[in-house]
Image (cartoon, rainbow, N blue to C red; front, side):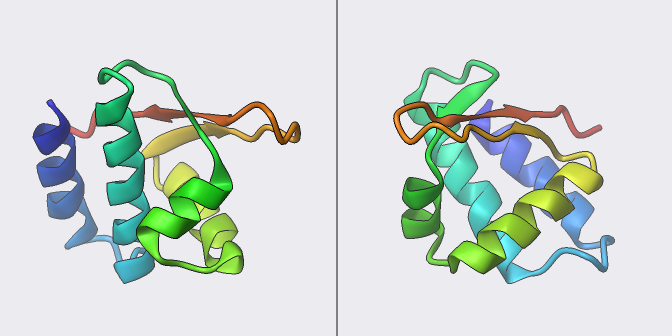
Length: 94
């Protein structure tokens, strides 16, 4: 299932001028967390972990998250509690 999300995402990004390498890297990091959490939506993820895995800056993280939400690729409910991860839902890309 994880590979299906990634393949569809990559097909979409080819035609989406707003998405670049940082978005792809962040989405791949989200998919890794999705897989590690049993491929159940939503996942709980921490910004610091996604930034580390995707190798992007904190500033890029926030921009990319906003762009992924605006593009309809994910839903994102940030957590402002350092002990609770943000909730991210992968949307089915048709």
